[in-house]
Length: 297
Image 1 (spheres, one colour):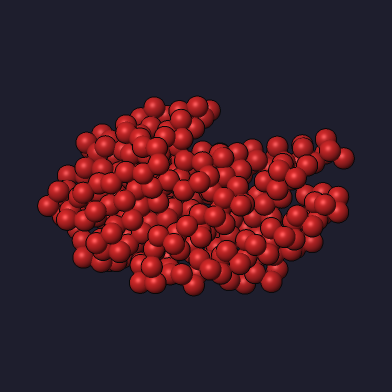
Image 2: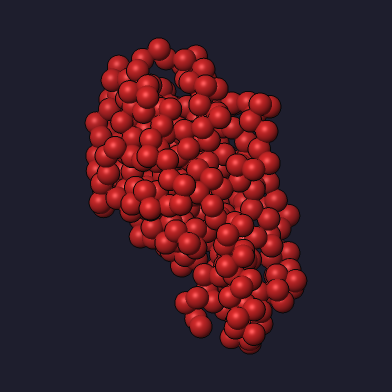
């Protein structure tokens, strides 16, 4: 029984968590960039639910980006930026290592941008199979750093391991805008990087931390969908996480296998509001089970 469970988990992980997550099946030729104004000189570039939202700061110091999407979207991103500003792209900060947020790093670096990330993110990217050296961040930080840019104070900080163990959250203090990457935010089933240092409990903790750092009027940019959400969506996601976590813990303690838990459709009461993202209910349950089984076994 244990060997069958392990085989299932390993197979699931190999299918679900490659560095270029979800690149297969995305028709980049038809994908278009939607530009949404969030605040003065702050815009979100959206390329569909399977690609990370890019936040763009424009101003006298140049252009600051959060994330870079997949590499085939690079020219479309640049074209969208050029409709906002002709200034040089100075910085790109990655919210985490997955390819839908980082695979465009190399192309941005070739334009002169300095790519930033948390220490663990660069280390994991460098050690990953098939790593592309050009995508690696040129500068890293440990716990937090502050960048004074385009008249704002940009706080870049690292929550405890959540989506991965190399996450970054980016907060524009003056504009009161925060990009939270793939910690629980927009109403979808989030990916949990269970092979990248992420965990269910870490996702819950990071969501609570976002609510403490932000305030009721903060415009929160999620990693996917959106483009803007607030406390209500985060609260609903945390409630969903707590409920599904409890159900999976009970099932594991009852000796149920991953196949049995997935077949039980334990998320069905949450499904109607969370089918717009790239993670299906079955995949989400697999992620939760994988993490908690490892910790409880």
